[in-house]
Image 1 (spheres, one colour):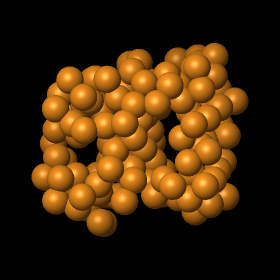
Image 2 (cartoon, rainbow, N blue to C red; image 1 turned 180 degrees about the vertical axis):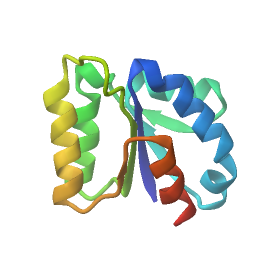
Image 3 (cartoon, one colour; image 1 turned 60 degrees about the vertical axis):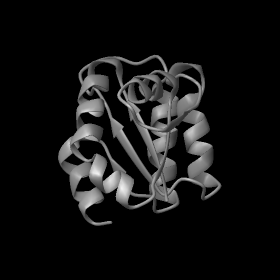
Length: 120
């Protein structure tokens, strides 16, 4: 199973904390993590094996969206900052739309992400 992790700048520490709190599930289920660039680098520094793609604003969100469309991504955990403006909003909405089109579970906050992981 491949899970994509993405976090806006104000949510990156929260993502790393989430991964640390759920590392037992992530390791026991043989889950492959992919991510946008900076989120992936922070997760790597925390000890996680992550394939980091491009930074979100530089095309990383679109790369993950392509993975969703190609059925290479099974779940997306995207800690968004709903109060900040993001120059790559079209890519974000495309990713969310494709998760709906291809019926890929998408969590946009820790509570939903936890429920998805517990359901594995």
